[in-house]
Structure formats: C-alpha cells, structure tokens
Length: 232
Image (cartoon, rainbow, N blue to C red; front, top):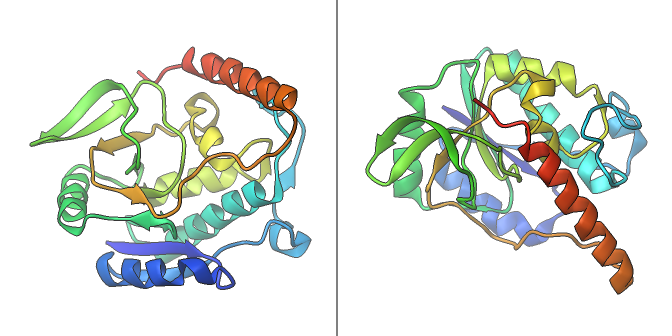
C-alpha cells in the first residue's frame, strides 16, 4: 500500500514529524499541501453558498479550503496511479507502528477500491455495523461519521467519486465527508488504532464571549441535524 503525507514545505515545525512518517508509513511520499490563500492553487474549486442541507453555519476559511484541495490532490494522484487504495495522512499524525501495521492488515483484508476507511485519532464513533474484529480493534460502519481527516485509507473508486462531488464546496472536507447522503460514499472507521495528533486540534477563531457562545450553539445545532441522517 502506498502512503501520501500532506505537508506544506514552509511548515518547518512539522518537518521532523514528516520525516518520522516517511520512515514508518508504507511506500510513503510527501504531497505538497495546497495554500488556500493562493487563488491560483484553488482555481479548480468553486466556493459556493449553501449547496446542501443541513446548511453549514460558518464561512469557509482559507485554511479549510486549502485542506480540502490538498485531499483532492491526493485523490487525483491515487486515481491516476491505478492503485486500488492508498493511505492518506496529514502531517500532524503520530502513529504507533505495531498497531498501525495491525490496522492496515485488517483493512487490506476487507478493503476494495470503493471503500473509504478512517483511522481516527479520537474513538468517538458508535457502530451501526461491525464488519470485522481483531482483538480490541473493530472495523465499523459508524452511525454518525466522525470529524477530522488525520489518517484514512481511500479506495481508487471512492477517490474518483469524491473528486466529482467536491468541484463546488460549501463546507470543510471532514464535514462534507459526514454527508454520505450527498456524496454517495459510505465511510468506515477502524478503532482503536493507536493514532494521535502531534499538535492539538480545535478552533482558533477569536472573538467576544457572546460570539464564541453563538458559534458553539450553531455548531451544536448543525451536528444534531447531521446526526439525524445516520449510516445504515
């Protein structure tokens, strides 16, 4: 299985972690991340208004546009390569190599080019179906798809499908992937898997206490609406 590590060369703080990932991930290469602030780099993506329901309540930030475009770059490389699937990782991923090997072996025994399997850093998903078990690890179809795109095994056919549905966007990549009723792409997860983040995630939006509270209310309402459309 080949691996692609999304990394912006100017992000020197993550260079050491990228070097570790190149050493431990199978057949790994670095894919230059897209700068969402550069119009030329995101020219093939149209940022539109409310395309889908539920409506995403926040304006897309340049970093979110660049993140989605970076994943599209990896999906395109996978399709062009003809490989059945690939591991796509972001440069803040920390892995436990023995557990990752177990996870990838488990995925490889069930994966096909139409599958998309998350290797989340947070084990928060509730299974709608359990496809396979190996000790404490379970390959599941989660009822509600989790957020973040730190690590995933993406099939070639899934990549082609996602390239088609992301030519016009109205929300970040992880929230779009939750919308299986829009993408037509089932999303599986394998957990626990030993993965962690090198840098803590979370919103960096600043503002007044009232503004932050409003965002949290909007976020909670949005997630509740997404949860009303579980995978089955």
